[in-house]
Length: 428
Image (cartoon, rainbow, N blue to C red; front, side):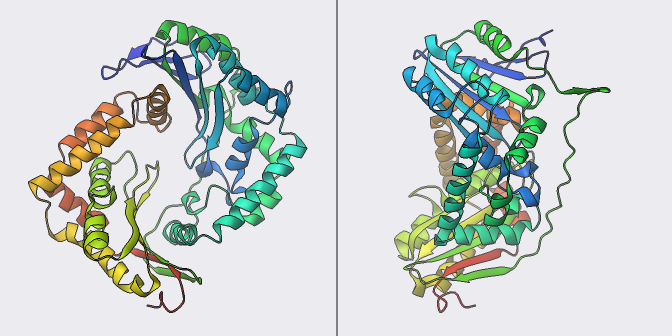
């Protein structure tokens, strides 16, 4: 039996669980004759072992390249004939298939997506091609100063935790991955009770739920002689703080300097405050770092911050690209501005401006059906539920200057340093 539908009060999102465990989220939006869908799978880089790093990325690169019934060319021609879009991607905490088409063609594209998810064939020729492309991508990142700085910072901060690895994997691990590895990983995690399908567009909740049940309802949960097969229990190492300085000498036209701090995961009460700090410090041309370090001091080619949403311990990173001769003063400037948050409270105007900017950008990120399907499915797969979208905005609205300072004092202690540039520029 279907679970009783639950309605989110914020956006009238209907949530239903099919008998096989698949979660269905539906938001009816009739502004355009388009339906967009996101199908999330609870897997990704966090679920890989260290010797199979890059497996999720390779799998999602191949999942649209053939099924037991269709070739890669037939799949591409079918999608093109409908004028639809279909793609697949992997992330740290999940994998994702994205669909969008006009309403009348949506049942067909959903049926194709179901076939791709349930019975990918991973043809050997396609596996070899995608492996070569991935290896080229890995080698390319090894020549990009920003990527080098980011990767060495990630390794220093996370150690053996999966977040310390890149989504592409390494040359060694990718070279060892086989078709059997793909089939085993797919068979383990791609199952209906480990998936969320989110739809937004010109379709009623009743019609959408009926269509998803018709398309996916006969997909059984894996069984053995003892009943349903449980998902693997992850053995993820703890992240232990060990601030350090890492540097790579490279003959480049600019130096990349980064400060990194271990930060709160999504489910923490500090998440909203850190997101607001990220906006204040490093988001856009009016951000504190841009105004102080680029506009006033002329130090930066680029300067910003990022604080990714993570299920486990996240990271807060401030970075700058600058002339090699300015690397030391740029690093001091970044640290000075981050440290300022621990000693000086934001003014009322600074705080309100950051809130307005964040909430405005957040609203603009939920305009299209594709964006709406993405946000509601993303929060569900990460375990936050239907009400988090509104609760998160409410949490941003009530952040105080005192909360900003206390959060900064908690997380912005001794930073990790990551530098890439000419040897003379990155010496301590």
